[in-house]
Amino acid sequence: MKKNKKKIIGWGIVILGFIVELYALISGITTNVYEVNYGLFAIMIFSYVAGTYIFGFKKMLVMNVISACSAFLFENMSVSFGFPFGYFNHFASGIRIGNIPLQVGLGYYFYAFSGWLFADLIIGDKDNDKLSKIARPLIGSFIASSMDLATDAINGLVMGSYEYPSGGGFFGSPLTNSFGWIITTFVTLIIWEYFIIPKKHKKVQSEDSLVGTPSIFHLQNCILLGMQILAPFIGFIIVKNKEVIDVLGNSWQVHYVYESSTIVALLILVFSMILGIFTWIRKREKNGE
Image 1 (cartoon, rainbow, N blue to C red):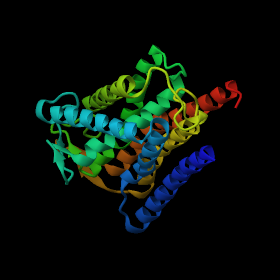
Image 2 (spheres, rainbow, N blue to C red):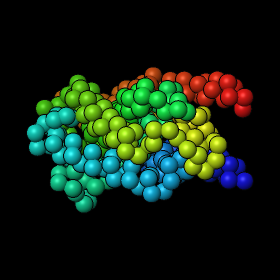
Image 3 (cartoon, rainbow, N blue to C red):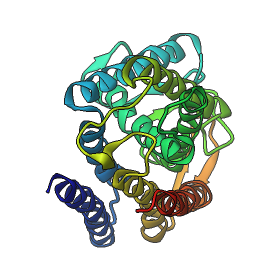
Image 4 (spheres, helix red, strand yellow):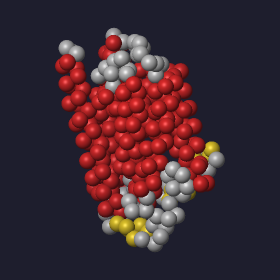
């Protein structure tokens, strides 16, 4: 019964993600206003639910605290000293920890968790060997950075949530932005590996919840990763004939920003979804499931 309940909840979140994106599409067409961050709604909820099932509620909260502390540390370092993201400024309103909006630091958890869960499917082992404990943070940090890249130019240049005073080649964002994401999430995930995840995994809820074993959550996470293409793609469909000027005075067509972001999501996140789904099927077959 618990196993079926878990499947229903997970698939319910996936369906909810499609509904939210459909709403964003219809709303954008009728009002000509599109909020790209709708695309993160489902994967955010999923990370809390799956994290609780796999690790338990208390450990999931600790993982949130670790990811937030890492994010606030490195982002504040960048604002003040330019490392590791490069010098940049946040313009989002609300409570701040140092120079960083609270919601920004807290948001790193679901990026990191989704990247980690994908990496666990690809390289994870039931015995949780040393290779797994190094490879998961490394692979997961690149997936998390790719998730950000798929909407980075939209949030920065189009929405004006932040800017790099020196500009950058990817619609105003520099290469250092991706380096910063990789470093920040890698530090988060390596701490998770050695302080949260035990050396040998034990059952948490059911046999389907073992880390290193292809669970239903691993499959659902892959689908949600691939769904990240919907946010920039919907923007590409809706937003036409609009121009923005970056901090250096360069002119950019918003339509092309959404198109380029869609290409990034297609070649990285949709590819990851396909790879993950076939890996999940192959591993389940080997386990006789």
